[in-house]
Amino acid sequence: MISPFKISVSDKVIDDLKHRLQLTRWPDEVGDSWKYGTDLNYLKSLVGYWLTEYDWRAQEAQLNQLDQYQTIIEDRKLHFIHQRSTHETAIPLLMTHGWPGSIAEFTKIIPMMTQPENYGADPQDAFHMICPSIPGYGFSDPATEPGFDQKRVAEGHIELMNQLGYKKYAVQGGDWGSAISSWTAKLAPEQVSALHLTLVFAGIPKRKSDPFEGVTEEEKTRLEERRQHMSEGTGYQSIQGTKPQTLGYGLNDSPVGLAAWITEKFHSWTDCDGNIENAISKDELLTNIMIYWITGSITSSTRLYYESNHVQNNLHEHGRIATPTGCTMFPGELFQPPRKWAEEMFNIQHWTKQPKGGHFAALEQPDLLANDLRQFFRTFRQPI
Image (cartoon, rainbow, N blue to C red; front, top):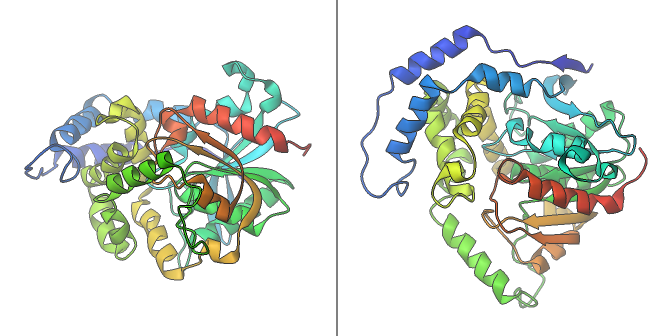
C-alpha cells in the first residue's frame, strides 16, 4: 500500500509556466507599497527572478533528497515525507503544515530533528519525521466530495500512522496544522503522547465572568497588536471560506496571480520588517508557490476553508484536550492568546516566548523551533 514517491515535473510544464510568465498583463497600482495588496515592483522583481534565475530542477533535487512516499487512504493518494533517524531512541513526530504552506516548509528542520548531533544537539533528542501533504495540497489527492474538513484530515493522519506501525507518537503543527494536530490528539488520545503548537486557537473563555483575570499587561498588549495587524488581513478567509471555486479559476490559470496571492501572505505573516527576504529567500518562496502551480492544487487547498466553515466541527465543543501540550509563541504569529486562555482549552505543560520569527516557524526560524521541540518532547519519550 505504501510506495516510494519522487517529484518529477516534465519539461512541458516548466516551458508552459515560462510562457505564461512572459505574457503577464500587469495591473496598475496606487498608494503605499503593500497597502492595497502585493506590491507591484516587488512582484515584478520576483517574476523576473523566476524567469531568469530560479532553478526548479535544483529545488526538485533538494526535495527529492528527502524520503517521500504515497499511500492510499479513503481511495485517495496521500503524499508524505517519512525521514527516519539512525538513532534507536528516536520517536515519531507527525508534523503538519498549513496554508499557503507545504512540505517545503520542513526541508531545513527535518535533518535537525532526525540527526540532532549534526547541529550541536543531543542525539538522544532524535525523531523520526512524518510530514504529510494535506489532502488537496501539493502531491496529495484532493477530496472529491463536499464535507472534507480539518477533522477528516486528522482522521487520515491517524490512519497513516497506523499504516506506518507507530503505536505511540507526538504531533506538531501551525496554521491548519495546529487545528489538524489538535484534532489528532482529541481523536487518538491513546496514541498521541504530546501535542506542540505554534499557532494556538484559543478564544475568550466563555465560562469566566472576567476573561482577562490572570492575563498580564504584556499579553493584553500583544493581543491588541496582533488584532490590529490582522484587522485588514483576513479578506482571504472570507473569499476562501465562501467562494473558493471562483477564486480558483484565476489562481490556477495565472502563475503571477497565484504568486501574488501567496506572496502577500508571506509578506504579512513572516517576521520580516517589511522585506520578505529578511525572513525567507526568493528560492524558498518560489518553491512553495511552485508546489501549488505544478500540482494545480490551489483551488482544492482553499476549499479547506469552505469545508471547515460549513461543516462546523468545532474542536473545543468536544471538551478540553487532555493531551500534554506545549506552545511556542513567535512574535510575528497571527494570533497570540494569553496563556490563561490556552489553559482553558489545552493541558498546557510548556510555554515559550521566542525572540524572533513569524507564522512559518519551521521555515523562518528552524533552529529556535527545533530546540523548543526537543526540550518539550524530551519529557514524553518512550520506546516505540
